[in-house]
Image 1 (cartoon, rainbow, N blue to C red):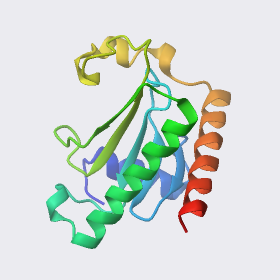
Image 2 (tube, one colour):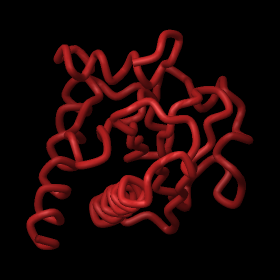
Image 3 (cartoon, rainbow, N blue to C red):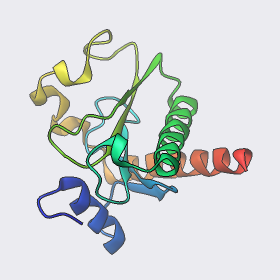
Image 4 (cartoon, rainbow, N blue to C red):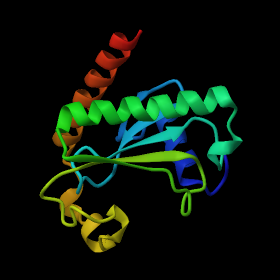
Length: 154
């Protein structure tokens, strides 16, 4: 764990059982739902160990991380039937490897543009914070789908 790393802080919360957005642990990392759901199903895959660049992973660890990202994308696609999936690995603000996975829908505020080009006041509006019941349902649905896909792939 690194100090001043939001991803490490979120992982610490997962390990303490206090991260309400935690869905499940995969081989390479932790699946969490995004705090705001402007893009229904928006999820992240947080690498278990603090690493700052993809090329810094061993070949084996990188392969597992990419496979887990693909598995999460497939699960979200099957649940939400989006028109497009966006996968982003940036690290400019949080320098800890983590995937942002966005199901993109026709009614997006900017269906042809980048997620990050949408004003923060829209992306982080309180109305996009799921209620506890919505969050619980989303987590159950995603966990069930991921478990099903893992079983099918084994």
